[in-house]
Image 1 (cartoon, rainbow, N blue to C red):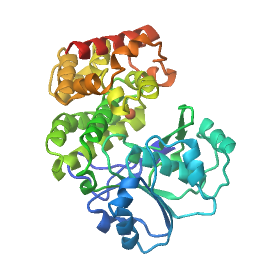
Image 2 (cartoon, protein in one colour; image 1 turned 120 degrees about the vertical axis):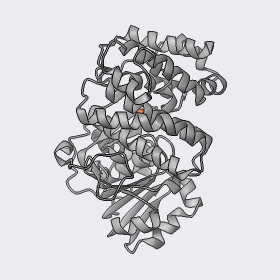
Image 3 (cartoon, protein in one colour; image 1 turned 90 degrees about the vertical axis):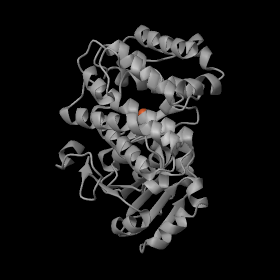
Length: 388
Ligand SMILES: [Fe+2]
């Protein structure tokens, strides 16, 4: 359905303008205080994480908007759980808009609240919704206004949300009606982003773009946006780490994440994400690191495909040199150091038998990949980093 909703838009590459849309998400850039009143024209529920309340942004939003604020949920934790969503869901609140101000976890929670809006929900009924993501009734949910404060997940431009069980099981909520109506990019919200969040977000976007290119479901449009994202990331991710207060660099990172998210929304992810899930679930490696540190080895695995030329072109190298280029890029921005110094258990990952093949993800890879292949990719990546 969302493919039919896609509108024609001019070539991207310059500043995102208000009339542009991707996935039918209307894109806006500029200061929150001036843009938001144009978008939120009725009652609203505000979803955010703790820091934005403490910084006074939630108060600023309330004073900027004329519509009724029906509730504020300002405690969304990383990786929101089923029990968190149910504990903060109020079926009596039926707002016209849900404002999601934050990173990927806030977007996830906001989509869950939109899915449950007006419904009395139990753990069993919410689980049934999560297990049948496209089957539940969602005819007229509140419009989601996505205001990302991190640059990486691309959640501001997808209809997907990830919700976790208490036992750490990952559930995907997905429905065309959960696509944000508007994404508002205000680079001022990114200027205080910690360096690890900048790094992990940028790497997640890089992985989304690469995975969209070595993907069986690629289209000319996903290729174009994935390449644009890689071009922006290669230049701006190291720059954002070196100069975090530079708003032009932050704008470029926002665009890169948006483009990579759009490409991924067409293709979904592939083997690098498949390998990443147990590394995050069982070893707590942040998602952006877990889905990117194996990219050089996945490139090597896929190198016979001419599609790798598209990544090499965008990265400014040759296909032959692409794996080495990527390994050097990751090392330069601190991925090897992070894994060696911050993860005591990094070296022991391969001693545990992990389920590295998620059939839906791995099946997207342009070259068929077995569990043994995935294990070899992981082993080589760990050896490279340990030997560096
Ligand atoms: Fe990702």
